[in-house]
Each structure stands twice: as C-alpha cells, then as structure tokens.
Image (spheres, rainbow, N blue to C red):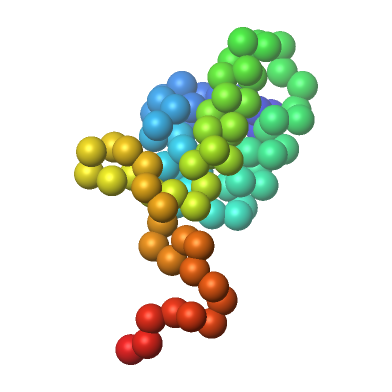
Amino acid sequence: MVAEGMLRFLEAIGPDGFGDAVREQGADFREALDVALTDPHPDHDALRDLRDAAARLHDTRGTHRTATGHHSPAAGAGRQPGRGRRR
C-alpha cells in the first residue's frame, strides 16, 4: 500500500521533483520511502524506478542544486564541528 502511493507520487512529479519533495518533507517521508522500498508490489519496473530515485537521493546528500541545476557542496559541508560562523 505504501509502495503504491510512492509510485503514484513519483509518476506525478517525476524523479527530480520527487527528490526535492523527499528532501523538503524530512525524516518521516524518508521513513515512508524506506517502507515503500521493502513493500511487495507487482510492478517490478516501477519499483526499480523508485529504487533509482531513492538512490539518487543518497548520491546527492550534502549537496544542493545551484541555479544552473548542478550540485555543489551544501553550506557548511566539510566544516569542523564548533567552527561555525559567529554572529
């Protein structure tokens, strides 16, 4: 049941929109995605597309899209803890 909802969502907004939505929704949505990836579903091709979309999320973690659509390190990525900008 969860897989069907995720598959419809992916189909409706496409892989790029799906990735953006998952990042915006946060941990609960990611948890639902993890459940969907383990749910049995008869459409194996669609599940593969969902797995591919989920894999792209992991590939781009710690990055954000620039105005040109390319990925760049997110603000603060690679900084040492406790070395944040002082205000």
